[in-house]
Length: 348
Image (cartoon, rainbow, N blue to C red; front, top):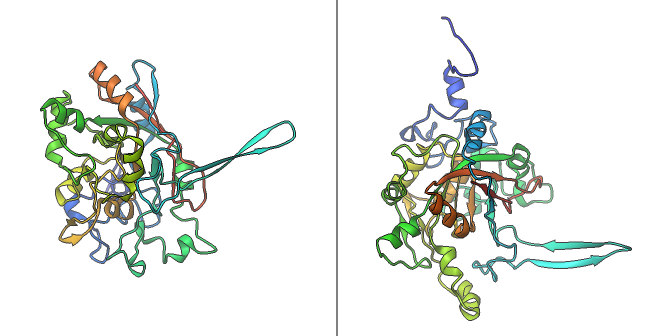
């Protein structure tokens, strides 16, 4: 049997698996002992990059062609925003100054989940009823929770993996909130409002995107309107937000959503809300109580970027009537790290 190899031709099943193109959603998981819709083994048994494998040299080169104006728009909130953090279990950032002889240092202490955040692959394992004994991380590479939070944590799946890879992608903004406004449809972004795949297809059409608007290696970003509503709060409402029910608009956690997202071969996803998916996390996928966090992070090795500041970006994109752009993300290079500010920049 003659096998011809080149940079453009993939000729074996192993090659195809390494690019994550051979596993259809209906084939997941590849082993019946793996959790719901896990993509374990799709990129190899020892893989730590997960969906970032969709980023290749060619996807980066292609993504650069999205830059037309040369306008860079940071899409991160201030590190102390929202303040106080919507999740009351997370303490606000503290910022101190340390004077020296002829210089001054910063001392910053923060939970990496209190502002715009990049969820790493140690952040959210599969679990049953949140039981620690049931935790299972991407590719089954972590044996126990002690390897994550114990006195001698392992390095596997640590944040340094994404930091040392570097992330440069073509991104697509789907402005669901703007689409809703265009139809004079109101919604409460602090309520449990589900955004469906059908909604997002309609948003893409409203924005003038073609039917096959996504490409492998893309980052999908959804503007849910959560941050816009947050910015209207007065001081009292802001202080009371962490005491509420914690509900949020976001992507519906469902079989339909998971299949729709998997088939797009996205490198990562993001939104302007606290979790990308709607809250609370009380849905089922493939007949099992699961969240998109479990499927993405624990199953596909796909990171989520949350609480993105999309307001200026959305305005500029609508002005240009162009909703694809170039994004760079550089996480903190923390060995065994869980999450990080993404330091994300959109360039249009």
